[in-house]
Structures are given as structure tokens and as C-alpha cells.
Amino acid sequence: MLQLNSFCHKNLIWLITLILYCQFTSAQLLEPDFTSEKREENSFRVHLIRTGIIGISSLQHFDLTAELLKFRYDTKNGVYLGLTVFSTRTIWMGNKEDTLNTFDFLMNPIGGTVHGNILSKIPLKRSKVKNSNIGLSIGSKWIQGPQAPNFKSTSFFDHYLRLGWIHQRLLSEDALTNSSLSFWAFPYLQLHQASEESRRLFFKEQIDPQAYGYGLEIGIAYNSQLKLSIYGQQLLNTSPESEFNQFVARLVAAYRF
Image (cartoon, rainbow, N blue to C red):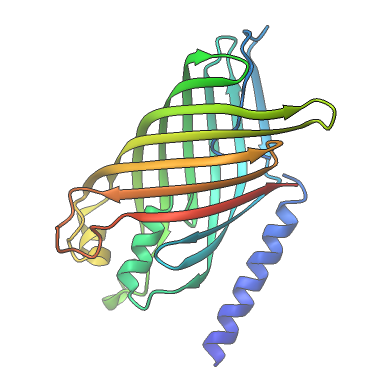
């Protein structure tokens, strides 16, 4: 009972902290942009977050994510480069297996106790209602795993690369009410790298230090303020009999205050 009360108390503090952060804050991984003309000049912006993100996964995790900091650089030619720092706190773990809980952290594209991500978009085709881009995402997550025997480290770093195609489309727009609805899709290939020791300790050597697979992100945005998205990822070079050889889906809702 004492451990349960301590757990609830820690998560309550983190939730209150997240709400306070969201009073100051802006940003997300994919932001709609339907500007067809070239910008007059390059722009650089720094954001403290004002977005609260709630997620639930097929591995029965319920979590909250905050975008703590974002640097954004847009060139005159439409190239986008953004550096974002995330922090995720899991409120509920539905799995009784520690390995699957840690696997959920690995398969959360915006997860990690601390998570730094660089996203670059190189435009292929742009118009007032749709655009296509090459998307390159590089990042590192610091993942806190379960308690380990013999006082071994309970955390590890996972480094990843995602390369794919980003398509965005404006579904509707009403100038009178200043409202809009847009859609995006981001299918990609991914590569993960971690130490052999962490793979052995947390995943029973059933995930290679260099793991590869594929993923997909699709979503809709209302006024660029409310965003609903679905993530799906799978690693391909795990053992066929492994519990990690599965497609992991995640439903995410984000609101910018």
C-alpha cells in the first residue's frame, strides 16, 4: 500500500508539473504548412512548450508527454529543421511483464524519460492545399527500465533514425470562422541502435543492438491546435517466436493551449 501511495503521489506531482508547463508552451513533430510561395527570408524560432500530449498503446500503456523545448529553422526554399526535447511519464502500465513494458518505451516515437529529436523536411512538391516532403528524423531516448539485479544500471540509451515520405493535405478551410482541418501521413523505415549489454539485460538478447523495421504516422489537425494521430511500428529482425515480433500501435491526442 505504501508503494502504491508513493507511486500515485509521484505521478500526481508529474501531472501537475505538466499542466504548469503547458501554460507557457508550442510545438509538435509534424506541423501543417501549406505555404506555396517562397519565404522572403529564413526564420529561426525558439519555443517553450504549450502542448499537452496524451497517449495509449496496444501494449496497454497510458502516458503523458511534454515537449519541453523546441528550436525551429525554416529556410526561404521551404526546408525545415527542428530540434525538440520531449519528456514522457507513464501513468498506467497494463502489462505484468517488465520486458514488454520496456519494449513499449522503445516503440513510443515520442517517448523516453528524456528524448531529443531532430526532424528535417525537404520539400518535393508544394501547393496551397497539399505538399510532399522527404522526412528525416534522428534522435536519442534515455529509457528508464525496471529494477535490475546486482545493482546494474536500470536505464539505457536508444539511438534511432527514421527516413520516409511526409504528405500533408488541407481538407477544409473556413476564412469566416478562421478554422481549418488538415491531414498528414508519414510512412518510414527506421533503424535503432543500443548497446549489447542493454539488449541482453532488458530484452533477453531477442532484439539486436542494431534493430531495423518500419513505421507509420497518420493524423488530423484542427486549426493546428487539436491533433489526433495514430502511430504504428514494428521491428523486423527480431526472433519470429519473440514477444517483441509484433506491431505496436499508439493513439495520441495533443492540444496546444
